[in-house]
Length: 612
Image (tube, rainbow, N blue to C red; front, side):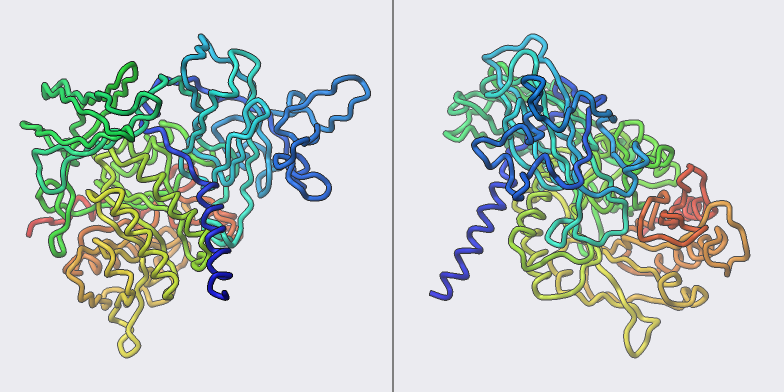
C-alpha cells in the first residue's frame, strides 16, 4: 500500500506534464507560406495576475463562468454600468517578435506576467481548410487563447510550438491573447540561477498557417549514417485521409522522384538511393531543393546531405577528419541590446564567427532562433545546439524531467533536417550526483532514439588532481554516455596563475574526441593597461595567447569554442564601472567593437596545422 501511495502521485505528475507539453510540431513551417501576426501587439502588465486568477486565487480558465475579469475574453462593457477593469485596445503596444525588457524601460528588470493581444482577419478564409497558430518562441510559459477559447499551454522559452485553431476561427474579427510569464522557478528548465538575461516576451515570429484537410505534418530526410548513397527518413501525415496515402519525395537536381505509401497511422518510412550526391561540407555547403508532396499539400525545403561520426578521438565529416574551429554565441543583438530575433541578427553573429575563421559555433545555452541553423546551412558553419539544463536542476522532479525532455524533442524535431547541426548537447556545468546522472542519461537516450545520425555531448567540468594541480582531469561517469568529451576550463581566470598556464596538461584516458567547450577572461573593451591588470584587453589577450597553445597539446583535441563571441547581458555581473550588468568575456563589445583577443584567436585559427 505504501508503494502504491508513492507511485500514484508520480503517475499523476507525469500525466500532467504530458498534458502540458502534448503538441505535434508542424515541420518546416519556416518555408511554408503563412499569415504573419508580427507587428504591434497591445499589452497589459499584470503583476498580481488578476487577469488569470480571481480574488480567491482560482484560475478563470478553469471556471464555467469566468466573468469579465478574465483577460483572455477581451471583454468590452455591455453598457455604461458594466464593470470591466481592463481594455486591451486602450493599452500600449510593443513589437512582436521582441522582448519587453529592451523595448520598455520600466520593464527592464521585470519578471512576471504580461498579457499580449492581437486582432486579425484571415484573407480568403476557407472553412474546408485547417488553420494552425505557430509561435517560434515565447519566454517562458505561454497560455494561448483565440477568440476567448484556450488553445493550450507551452513551457520553454526557446523552442517552437503550435496549436490547431480551426474550430474557433472566423474570417474576420478574430483575436489572440497570450499570457506570457517569465518568472524563474526552481522546478523549471532553466532553474532559478543562470548567467544570462531572462528576456521576457513573445521573442520570435508568430504565424498562422492554412493547411489542407490532410497535410504533411512532419518529415525527416537525411543521409544514412552507414551508407553514403542512401537517403533515409520518414514522412508523417495528419488528417482523415492519412491512411494508405501516396506521398512523393522529389529532388529535381538529381532527377529523383520517389513514391511511398503511408500506413494506418499516416507514417511512411523513406529509403532511396541517391547517386552523384555532392556532400554538404564546410568548404562546399551544397543544399538541394527538396519537395515533399501528398494530395493538395506540398512542402519545399533546402537540405544538405552529409555524414558525421567519430572514430576513436577523431571527428569525421563525410569520412574526413575535421577540426572544429569554433566560438560560443549567446542570442543577443549587440546594437539593440535585446534578444536577437531576425535574419539580420543571425547574419551579424555568424558573420563575425566567419570573420574569426570559425567553421563551428556552439549556440549556448538554449536553442537559438531557427534563422541561425538555416543560415549556418547556407554558410557552411557546423553547429552545437543545446537545451538549458544548466547548473542546478531539480533532478528528482518528474515534471522537470518531462519539461527538459520536451524541449530536447522540440529542438530535434525543428532542426533534424539541418546539415549544419552535428551535436545535440543536453547540459552545461551540472554538479555530480546519481540523480543527475540518471536524468541526463535519459535525455541522451531520448536524443539517440529520435536522431541516430548526430553526435551527443554536454559541457562538463575539469579540475586539478589533488596531488598535482598542474594535471587536469575530468572525473564524471556521465562522460561514458557521450560521443564527444567536452568540458569548460577557466584556468587563469577562476583560479590559477595565468603565468602557469603553459605548465598545465590534461590526463584524459578516454578514446574520444575532446572539445574545450569554454575558456576565456573578461575585458572591458577600450580599457588598456599592462597584461597583468584584470579586466584590461591586454589581460584577456594574454590569457588567450597562453591558453591556445596549451590546449593544442591535448592529443585528443578536436575542437574549441572559447567563451564568448560578444559581451552579453547578465544580472550576475554587477561590478561598476567594468561590468554594469554585462558579462565581459566577449571578444566583441556590446557596441560591436573588437577586442585584442579577437585578432589573437583569428591568427591562431589561420595558422592552425591540421595535418596528421
